[in-house]
Length: 117
Image 1 (cartoon, helix red, strand yellow):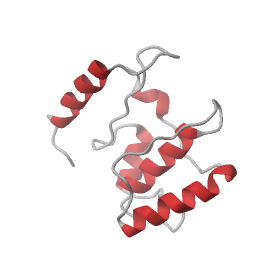
Image 2 (cartoon, one colour):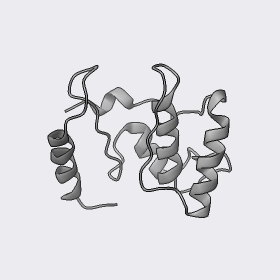
Image 3 (cartoon, rainbow, N blue to C red):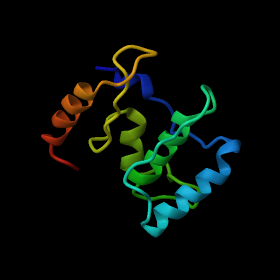
Image 4 (cartoon, helix red, strand yellow):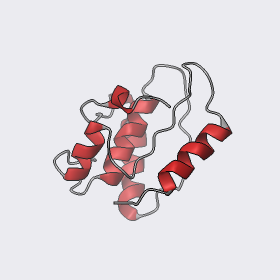
């Protein structure tokens, strides 16, 4: 299982070249029409994970700002520490490999049996 400590950083900022997509995602989130699943694709190194992390922060934030996560609430602190109980991050078991279905199933079952906060 990947180490959650690998993602303990300041909450991500959106990169300038994602502004159009970010605005659309925030509009959908505030309107309650954000899709249940999103596929972010593109070349390596353009910040797809950073955009996804910023969206997760905006979704779980208890005191959002107009630009996304407010970064001051308990949810943001937990997310920043990599310990938010309602966020499940599934990464490949080995760098450069795909995420296996069994891996998703195992991690999802483990997450579901925990009590949501």
